[in-house]
Image (tube, rainbow, N blue to C red; front, side, top):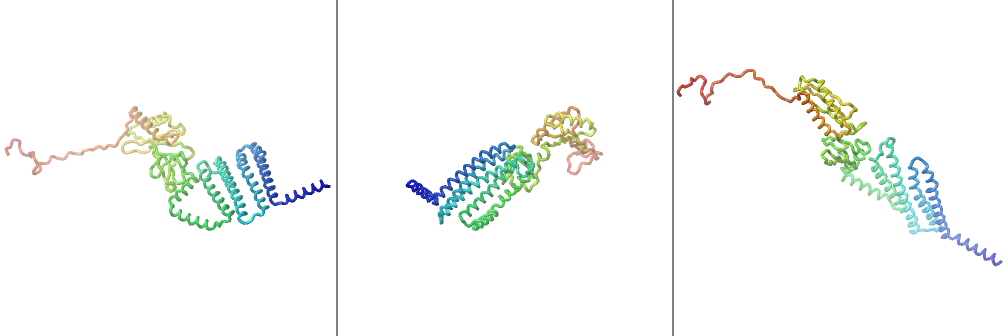
Length: 379
């Protein structure tokens, strides 16, 4: 009977301990840790193995960034339930729930930033389906989304700590207006840069010609300015607001990067036009940097003042070769014309004298004798 009494006493003591809020809170925390570990093992084990069997890597990376936040969220939920069982109140309650919420916001914000990067990088690999997202615009969308995510996280952080956000929002609006007026050129360049990245009139590596005459290769497209390297190896920086409101010739735009060059020549009247065309075509066809397709061609342009004007049209692989090929073709055409006896006219004027004026008498005061004075007459 004594053993039974001892067992009942211990059972009653255990029941009293189990009914203690602190014991229940500890049990909930331990249970949440176990559930969190099981969930983490489930995601990182079975689900990850299933994801690796698919053809795409998106699900693998998504599972890789997902299992840690789930572990933390399950654990934070258990701690929050345990705190509720303890019956916290006052400042201790505010600090406990505020701290748990702050940790949850930081973990969720980190997950959202990672997910944003993953999704944008995946979309950038399919430019045919998502035209506005590619390797050039990827930093822009990533940074803008990160700013929005951080702003949303800060908003919920204020709500968790019971802070009034209306005053902060009003102050931010006033500051935004002041910054907008004070830095309107910077803001204009920023929005112009966003439109340039979205509309893509040119990209890095393109050869462009500005309305002011500068020609070069685009080396960088930033949110404030565009940089281009001229053929003289001089870097030109142009604000995006100007680039967005000026005429730009993109020499590498279109279906391919090939460019047509024009060699203007003249031959004297009386030259054999067919021979001149044959010389020009053979000069272009024999150059290694001239494209075989489209084939070079010659066009008879005008009957000039001093001779016949023709134009040799040929294609090159990329605009950077234009100066080199023009130099080679002009040299080749000049030498071939000299060899073939084709005269290159130049501007000249012939003066025809209809009649010579009659000899005039010596004017008064003019030195010398008059033609009517006989030779040898004494003064």
